[in-house]
Each structure stands twice: as structure tokens, then as C-alpha cells.
Image (tube, rainbow, N blue to C red; front, side, top):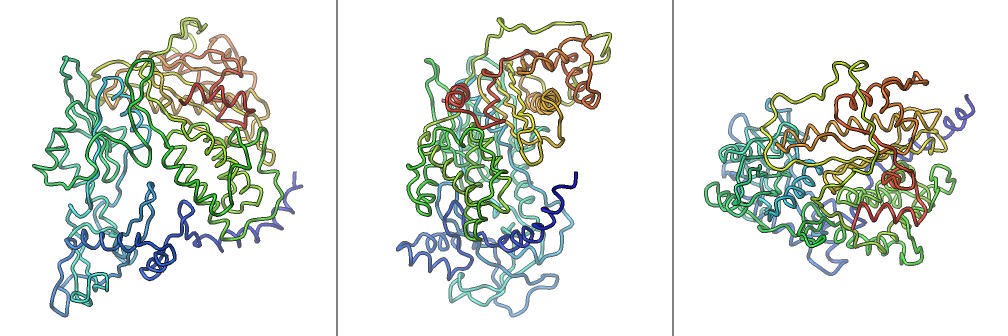
Amino acid sequence: FDWWVHDVLKRRERLIKMARSHRLKTGYKFGLRVPETVDEAMEIDRINGNTLWQDAIEKEMQNVYIAFDIRTESQAPPGYKLIPHRIIFEIKMDFTRKARLVAGGHKTDPPAQLTYSSVVSRESVRIGFLIAAMYDLDPQAADIGNAYLNATTKEKYYIITGPEFGELERGKIALIVRALYGLKSSGAMWRAHFAATLRDMDFTSSLADPDVWMRPSILPNGEEYYEYILVYVDDLLIISHRGIEILELLTSKYQYRLKDVGPPSRYLGAIVGRYDKNGRKTWYMSAKDYLSKALPVVEEHYGSLNKYKADTPLPPNYHPEDDRSPFLKDEEISLYQSFIGTLRWGVELGRIELTFAVSLMSRFSTAPRTDHMQKLLHMFSYIKRHLDSKLVFDAGTRDWSHINFLQHDWNEFYPDAIEAMPPNAPEPRGRAVQLNMFCDAAHANDHVTRRSTTGLVIFILGTPILWYSKRQNTIETSTFGSEFVALKIATELLEGLRYRLRMMGIPLQGTCNTFCDNGSVVNNVSDPTSTLTKKHNAVAYHKVRESVAAGTQRIAHEMGKFNLSDVLTKNLPVYKHKACCCCLLH
């Protein structure tokens, strides 16, 4: 058992030293250099022959001026404390440069009020676009300019103005009177401020996702439904047939300065647009623009990607844990981590087929090797050849009448089994939605730890809404055990999604249709008389069986070559990878 101890202890100090040495030496985002100071920003502009960072600084100072009460006195009022400030530089997801003046909140005392501020989840965003497709709605989007500065602050701090304020104001005392970025309570103050606005408009926050705001409404044809406002800090997405009216009200009555108003052409870095699917107008989300802007950055560092000719994200049966090539140097480690960050967000924007490969390569972000970087370049080569893949929000149901779902009486085994219904759920309105789920496990596919990988994808109607790929926390000695653990994880995620839908007022079309490619597992959870021979899987066994008895899901066997979740558990050969992608993306 102790064969690995000597090697691990021998490498421990070296790995820890490497992690510490480059932990703070990132300096890049999307492969582009990010300045630390104003002087460095000006130097980058000089080298690149442009004024991108200078323009960003000037724009920020024009907007942030209202956050300060600049005094002529030489001393601050009683109770105010001096804190530092600086300009933070950022590269947005569309690769525009952004400068933000922030207070040194790390030097302040913890405020008495709440400081937590949430954002809408990506699953809720996908559900929102699917709702728009179901009812043929035209969503509206907007960005609230300098959102935090709309809210006041209760914290008492001041700064000494620097050169960014201009020579006439330099060196003066400036009291912070608005929720300036950097203060510990600013995010919470802005959220509370905007929440009060939405409540005044009769919107209610969903208890499943507090940044989903909903209000009962009626379509022009008399059909009932809920209209939604999804809030991601200062980005708004309105799912309603009266979206323009809502935006006009926010501008006229509540005096918000809205930018990029209109039907969404991009949202959180993704391209969003109309899509014609079998004669029916729907919506799609694509990471094409986001990823295509990252490709030149990769090629700037490592040359043309065309030499890789990749048809899958990673070569079939590739195992990075077996690699023994030299470790990357610090600067390349920063690039590796930056590339991983780019790929992870691409997955969030709908590139489902990249999920397993990105998760696999992310495990080595602390100490990547040269061949690991080569495989990332292989992934970018694949992306370059498949940029047009998109997630389409398909509102059509699926016909499973040809599938043999076993029906049994579970009363003798789980007499009290019933799906938990939230007592405070809003009244369901509108059309019911169908849920379908595919689940799989790759047994012991980590050659070092021998842990298995769980992969699953949950569809609402014909749209993938939630996907998952992760190593299991336990080591299973059989395929049966790993598949059971995967199905238990899938069941928990399914229950969470059903709760989310109910708390958004969306009615459900009965039970979820679940597909698993292990016949023994399907038999154990579908037949009440089937007994468990492996007792250590008892928790997963009873969790899944009880959900079947409660009517949360019904489970059928799906042949492995047709299981869509296969792409989330292993590196597939080209023909099977393409077969899965055709059913997940367009």
C-alpha cells in the first residue's frame, strides 16, 4: 500500500514551492498582458501602438466622480478613516479594456451590515431563453451603467486624490459617499438598492435563485405565464412580452442609465440570436465570438494551430496523469491557467462537448507539464475547426413511447415515498415542461487514483440545461458501483433542478425520463424485488430507488453507444464524439 509514499514525499516540497512561486504571477487574462499600474498601462499602449488602456482610464474617471465629495479642508470630518485606492485593470469577455477605480477595502474594518451579493446562475439563464422559445418572446437586455454608484454607502471612509483626478483636484480629501467598488459592502448595497426597485415594480425574487425576479403576466392571446428579470450584477435579461415597457420604466421612473438596450445579441460573453429549427423560430447561444477572439492570442504564443488537425478535444484514451514530460516554467504556467479559464467559460457558454476535456486538464493547473500544454493547443485546434457549434433552445417534447420503462408497485418497499413539494412555491402558470436525463460513469479511468468519472446531462424539453463531469469522491471496485454512484449524483442534481423549476412557477410534465447504460443498475432501481448484493452501495441504492418510487424519475436502459453522457466521461473516438455532439449541439 505504501509504494507511492516515498515518491510523493520526495516531490512534495518541490510542488509546494512551484505553487507558491507562481501563485501571484498571473499577469495575463485570455493570454493578454494585464497592467498593474497606470504607468504600466501607458507602457503597454506605447508598445502596442494604441490608446486602449488610456481611453479606459479616462472613461472610468468621468463616471466615478460622483462617488466622492471632494473637500477643501485639510482634515476629514470626525468618524471618517483614510484608506488607499488604486485603479484595477481588466479585460472583458469581448476583449475590450476596462479600468476601475477601487477603494482599498482590504484596509477597512468588517461592516456591521451584510456584504454578500449573488448573481443569477447559468442554468437559470438557459431556462430563461427556453421560456422565450416556448412562448415566442423577444427577450430584452440592458447593462446598467456604473451600477454600484447608484447606491449610497454607510461606510465612513475617505481617500487622498491622486493624479487620475487631475492636477486641480490632486492631493485633496475626498469622502466616499456612494457604494464605490472595493468597499466590502458595495456589492450588497447595490443589490439591495436594485432589489427595492424590482419589488416596487411588483416583481418577486425566486427562492431557488434570488437573482431571478418574476411577476405573473398574461400573453396577448390570454395564456398565463410568468415574466422574468434575470440579474447578473448590472446585466439585465428580461423575458417578457412587455420587455421594452419594463426598460422604459427603469429609465424614466427610476433614472437608471441603461446601455446596450435591446434584443440581446450577446449575453455574458456568448453570442445570442434567433434560430430557425424545423420552421419554428427559437433562440441559440454560441461561444463562437468569445473563443474566436482567444485563438489569435494562443497562436501569438505558440504559432499556428492548424498543424494539430484535431477532430476531438483530446486524443482518444489520452490520460494526462501518465505524462512525465518536463514541468512548465512560471510564465507558461500563467498562460496555461489563463487558457484553462478561457476554456471553462466556453463550457459555461454552451460548449458541452469540451466539459470532460477541460475538467481533466484543469487538474494539472498547479504544476502543468509541457505535454499538458500541447494538449491544450490540441483543444484550441479542435475549437478552431468547430467554431460554429451552438446551443439551441429547442422547446419540443420527445416521444418515448417506444421505450420500455418498467412500472411496479413500490408501496410495500417505500410506503411513504413521495416527492417533496416546496410549500412556499408560487402557483404554476403556463405550459408544462418535460425533463430527460442521460447518466454515465467511466470506471476507474484515472490511472493514478483509480477514481471513476461521473457524467450527466439533463434536458428540459429538447434543450440541454445542466451538464456535469467530475471525478467521484470514492474509489469503486466495479463498474456497477461507479454507475450507482453516478446515478445517485444525477438524482440529487435532478431534484435540485425540479425544485428550481417549481420555484420559478414552471409546471412539470410528470416524471423525468432517465437513461443509464448499465443493465444491472437499471434492474436494481426499477424492480422492487431486486436486491443489492454490494452493501457499501446501499446509500446510493436507496436514494435512487426512493426517487423512482416517489415518481421523481423513471429509469430505462440505454445502450452505451447511444448514451449522450458518454462525451462527459471519457475521450471518445471521432465517430462517437460526433454522434454525441449532433444530439447536444447544432
